[in-house]
Amino acid sequence: MKLGAHLLWAVVAGAAGLFVLLGYFIESEIIIAMRLVLMRWAVLISAWALLLGLVNILYVHFIKVRDMEPGWPYSTVLMLALIVTVVFGALGPDNDIIVMVFNYIHLPVETSLMALLAISLAVAGFRLVAQKRDWPSMVFAGTAFLVLLGTVQWPFFSDELFIDLSGLRDWLVQVLASGGARGILLGVALGAIVTGLRVLLAVDRPYGD
Image 1 (tube, helix red, strand yellow):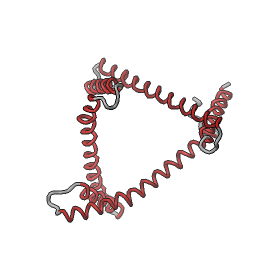
Image 2 (cartoon, rainbow, N blue to C red):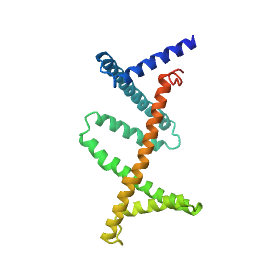
Image 3 (cartoon, rainbow, N blue to C red):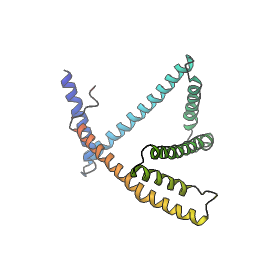
Image 4 (cartoon, rainbow, N blue to C red):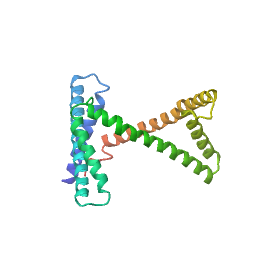
């Protein structure tokens, strides 16, 4: 009975995946209609999963606040922020309160995190050079240092030197970093294709348990 149920789920998942995949290559009204229906089901299920996740977050932090566990004030702030965002976000993205929350809370926090990330990368680069003095470490630390110098204009630099550093920074970001990012994205795409094929062929069955 268990083997039959696993086989049924494998057939259903494989058929759904094939309909969606074939809808991009075959001009058939039936296949395209089935693809749209399956994709709408997937969006609907994802929306309900997101809603259940939000309810679970509220429940977990409510229990934490109720029992006065360590860190409960942060849980209180999280719950209030989540409730305010959901309530006023339902009024639309152009709501004045949502815009104010984004401009005066979300954006400054995000900017602060990016600044902390820059400092953390700089410190990590110097520590890497101090502990392991080989040419890859030197290249990493030197590249990070040049990018930082070319991003923000320093008061003791001349305008000409800043323009030169900005041009070098743009070349590093647009050529070397973009090439590495494209390679990573290609690897992610190939991994997603292989994973999808393994699910379609019922080699992997994440839906079976």
